Image (tube, rainbow, N blue to C red; front, side):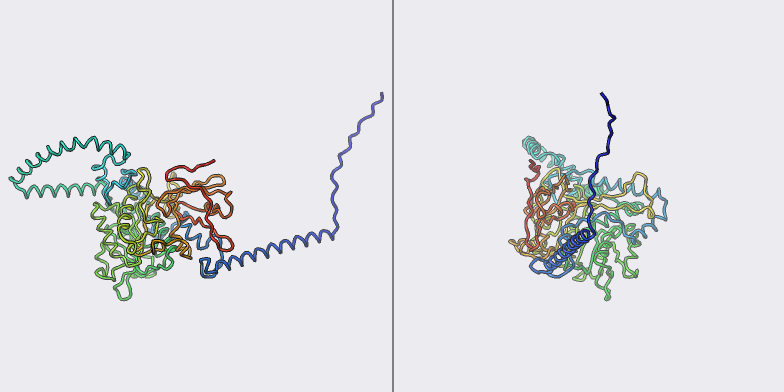
Length: 561
């Protein structure tokens, strides 16, 4: 059979659609019309948003340009600041001080400070604060309550076993003490009392040496390197919260007790503006810093000289409250008092209580009192003692602004393995101010515990039956919002938040993307540790709706399907 060669022909491709010029023009016109319609819809949507913002029933009261990222609700809810750089006016002074010493000297001094600083807080562990006396020393907890970190059940069992032994020993001990006292009284009762007093004084002095820090010149420069710029951002974050949540509060006089290098007053003036130290009459103090340590006071006065244009109007630096002009009457009171990282360095509990009472008397009516301590179990213990001292007063006299959304017993203080603290991220000092070591991190995570109190009432304490619906502005509504007490857990299409609610309990919620636009998923993604989540979302008509979220009991894990 004859075989013909097979010829392969190329496969025919798709036909190219040819359209006329008239059809192309029509398609272009249709696209243009669609674009115009979308632009008109966007304009209508923006005008509608502006109308809602200007509506007094919605809660703003004044017309203003709408910005979804920086509106009033966002500013009041998202209070935690991002990692920012140290201001240039602070860096200039730091550079001048560091230039007088070698790099190795400054690093050695900063390491020396951090070692002594860590000793103050590395001893204590989280504990149930119901069994701790207010403002007590660390040595008292270690010596008198060695088993305070153990479970309560074991502690009760041990106490029951030792009851009988203690009763028998007490009888024998009382008889022995009586004989000893009789002998001492015969020899000389005055000398015995004198010896007892000297022993107590020696004990307090030894506690002061162990659990306090004496700032020498080297420690002051190390504090400037390691702590001062990062404490500044903590104060700035707290004062900014006061400004956002109390918009009508404008302090005319500020006191920074235990000022260190003046980071508290510096942050206040950066937020509320620069203020003169003494009024024109020479009697009313506007900005004062109390620092008993000579080395810290000299260095702080040098750093804060350029806060105002004239050096004579800068911060008034003194070594005690009695040195402030007009301290005997109403003129010596302040609108804003900042006490930062002070109670940890006071030697005794009585002195801590005396300081708190004296400063509270210096606060004017409707003034704000800010207490900050390191974010350690020891720092939280002092904050909790001050909180109990505030709760013992009536709400007309004192009300908590932050971080607690309630005036009930603290749920974090009852757990032996938890404590309430927060975090503030900041950037390290740039290299042109001081060179960074090779292994040093670029970001600093400063942990802190705090309490902001007002000498008066807040929207949540005006009446016992007051609710969020009774107020219109976001600043007033924020006193009924919960507080995030732990870092947010971000998972795939859902976030998990742990917050302290207005009922005085720790609550866990799951906010998923499937809950819809009104579920608060977008807001939850932008939240940070320490924020106040506004879980109420609004539609175009300004009606608020509660987000759909799951909750669980305190300390338990959420249920997942």
